[in-house]
Amino acid sequence: MTKHRDDAHPSLPSEARPERPEAKSESRRLHWSPLSFAALGVAALSLILAWYALSESRQFNEEKQRLQTAFETLSQEQQSHVQQLNQLQQQLKSAQTRLQERLTELNTHVNTAMAQRLYQKQDWVLLKARYYLELAQINAHWTDNQATTAALLQQADELLKTLSDQRIYEIRQAIAKEIADVKSSPTLDIAGLMSQLDAAQSLVSKLPIKQSISSPSANTLPAAQQGTPSAWRERLRESLNLLEKLVVVRHQTDDIRPILSPLHQALLRESIRMNLQEAQWALLQNNEQVYQQSLAQALKDIHRTFEKKAPATQSLVNELHALKQTALNPARPVIGQSLPLLNQLIESNTAATPSAAQPASTQEDN
Image 1 (tube, rainbow, N blue to C red):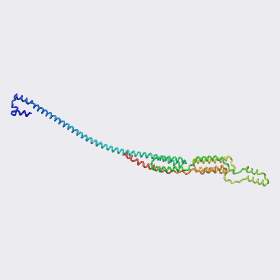
Image 2 (spheres, one colour; image 1 turned 30 degrees about the vertical axis):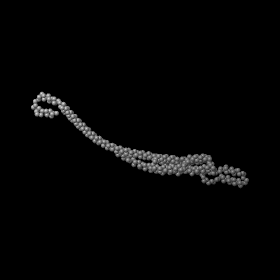
Image 3 (tube, one colour; image 1 turned 120 degrees about the vertical axis):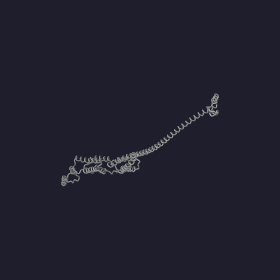
Image 4 (tube, helix red, strand yellow; image 1 turned 30 degrees about the horizontal axis):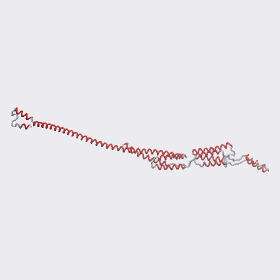
């Protein structure tokens, strides 16, 4: 549009040409022509478009810069997150490793604790069973109470029955054999023997005293009752017999006086009773020697003092002989097989317990 205005006056410059009023008005008319308006609009539109394009370009650049900055920030954050994620993964792996080690350690501790608890319970049962076996062995050796010995053995067997160890079977077999031996061994009936000795004491007062020498009155009565002598020879014979009775020579072999007073007889009976009571004491004390000596002394006194052929004497003598045949110390059953086996098992468990508990202590130290 400026070029078109210059082409209207090509020959004259603007300073050389004089301005005419007509030209000015014409120039004004040309300047404000529709074409000028269109050119002006185009120029304004171009300026607006240029400004808009420049603004858009600036905004685009700014947005691009912002996006690039944001992208760089995101990239940095992503790298940081990746690093953090890697660190977390490493920490997680480390935590998993430590957790696995801890679980393994706890499992070992639990197994060790269970093994120790099992050993402790088993050892407690074995020790208690050994205590019962020791009591049974002592009771069988020093007393004749076989029922108590069998009960102690059965109690030990009941304790061992609660354990599932295969080695217990051999010990229980030995205990069963010992129980059978105890129950099959002969028993001493102390109450029955005491009753027999009491009955023997009551029979002592019924025994007749031995009549070893006849009294003079008893010897002369038959002669006086034979009637009157018919001749002097008969009287002489009677006189000689009477003289023979005045002097008597006897050979004493039993140290018994011919005539015993009632007090002496009572003392002899009481002595026999004391011997029988001494036999009872020896029976209660399980003293075989005193028991036999007391019965032997009682039999000796009976034979020396009382009439042997009397039924009461024979009955008492037979009963005392039967009592002498009773042994106060019969063969006792030997209880010595199960206890050594049980001691061997306890020693083996004691030796195995420290090795089982050693790993746990080592891990705790670490």
